[in-house]
Image 1 (cartoon, each protein chain N blue to C red):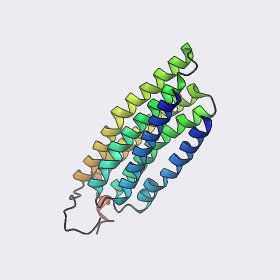
Image 2 (cartoon, each protein chain N blue to C red):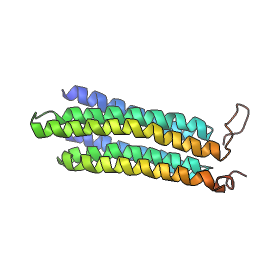
Image 3 (cartoon, rainbow over the protein chains, first blue to last red):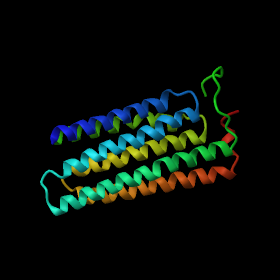
Image 4 (tube, rainbow over the protein chains, first blue to last red):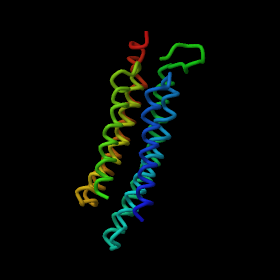
Length: 107
Length: 93
C-alpha cells in the first residue's frame, strides 16, 4: 500500500517539476500556458490521489469520509484549472497579444 | 512515511520558486496571472501534505478546498478585469 502511495506521489511531483520548468523555458505566453495548465492539473490529481489513498490506511468511516472529500477536491481542481487557464487566454487574446512565431525573439 | 511527506512538501515549496520568478519577471500581465495560478494550484497540494504531517487531515482538506476556490475566483476576476483595461500593452512596447 505504501509503495502505491509513494509511486503516485512521486509521479505527481514529477509532473509538477515538468510544469514549473515549462513555465520558465517556453518562449511565449501562449506556449507557457501548455505546461502550466495541463501539468499542474495532472500533477495535483496524482499527488492528491496518493494522499487520499494513504488516508485509507486505518480504515474507519471518518477516514473514508475524508478520502471522499479529498477526491472531491480533485474533481474540483479538474473543473477549475482548465477554466482558469481558458480565462487567462481569453484575457490575453482580447487584449491583442499575438502568438509567437518561429523566427521571433523570446518574449 | 512522515519523512516522505515532509520532503515532498519541501520539494513542492522549492518548486514554487519558478512560477514566482515568472510572476515577477513576466513581460505581460497575463504571464503574472499564469504564475499566480501555478503557485495557487501547488499550494492546494501542499496544504493537504501539511494536513497529513500534522495528522489533522479533515481540517486541512477544508482549507485546501477553500483555497482552491479562492484561487479560481481570483484568476477569473483578474482576467475579467484585464478585458477592459488596455494596461496590458505598456510593458510590451
